[in-house]
Image (tube, rainbow, N blue to C red; front, side, top):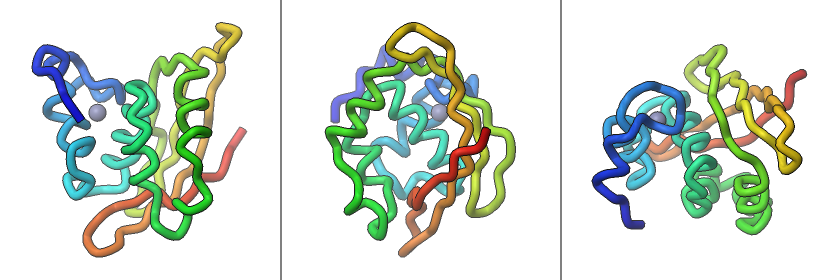
Length: 133
Ligand SMILES: [Zn+2]
């Protein structure tokens, strides 16, 4: 993956208000850089904004990754315009968030999810998520 230096100084796509280079970029380059479930969740949202499909696929836990299809992830990432991430609550292994986006018709939608994460051999992975209303 090629990261452009100029782009790295922009604010991170995960709404952290930190530069991308100090936030999700290191995690996008190496999953081991995610030291908490929340940092991985933020990096996954940011990956949706950037269309980093391999990262989204690879950050699934091995137990749930086999049910994923890169084409479906790519479709979901590109069909919507990702506007903002709100992390509502985070525990050691769960993150509840709202992802604000515009759907293909330009309508505002909110994806409200409680995600579960698991650390395996020192690496945090996304296991699955439950939609909340
Ligand atoms: Zn970030």
